[in-house]
Length: 416
Image (cartoon, rainbow, N blue to C red; front, side, top):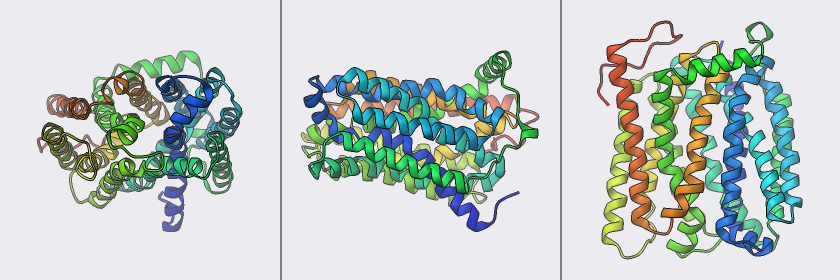
């Protein structure tokens, strides 16, 4: 049964906050990259690995968060993850060499996924259909603020004269507040009677069954690849802002506000469309936005000798809007495939996305970040790949309709 309206709003705020400490962990330290490289005595490309290590650890542990919540309950797993995150953030703040910092960044990554991954399962525990889409969109809209304000906060901290460790102490305080809010406000949505025993054999069989499901593969790949088109710019933010745009460490808002503003707008529109527009039609609109953004970014890089605001970032805003429209539909479609294993499905979906993000940040971004055309072509490739996976799922759905899901397949009447 849905919660009362006031509790639903509070739940949306809390779940968005729980999802925020992941992006905060990544984006808040972007303005500190030059200072980190100088203070730790390493090249800035080595500092980039603080993002890759975090994301790889996040991806690996994402396989366990959902399964743990299926076995022990959602609230207990979220609180455990938050406590570990507080300790890891304190360790980062106290680090004095790159090796130690990377170790504690990995520990941050191991714990940070609890909020986002288990939070998605909480939404689907409580709601179905367009109500679930509305809440997912509300959470995505609020959550979208985090990557926009995180580097701004990091820039303010550095601009005040504080060193880079203060950024991690800020994360300690933020996570501690979330522990208090979770303990007081988050209901347990997965009662003992619905829990599944945690055993290595059963866990392996569950992962294998979901991972080999062709529809899961198509939907998870579509979401991960489409987001990678946006993530490429986010992962390249230090170079884009301070080198291509010629801004300072206090000016990350020039990139992040348009990027996340577009995603927030798309999430808001998704919530408004819920129950009024077919999910497949909404996804089509989202991919059209991504196509327009791709053409605009390639055209701008072709005709402009410099990379300047606002023209350089407007296509990213449009692409973010498209991503905000696409993501809630794909995320809920995956969860609806496995009504008794939503935590497991959410974990595997997150694993696919996070592994993709880690590869983009650690491998692709350093190769393309210094050239606007290479960035535009890279993002376009990801958008096209995401759309092709979506189209493949739509066509397979027309041939082999799935039986037994809690909610129907996305309507096959409209071509994407």
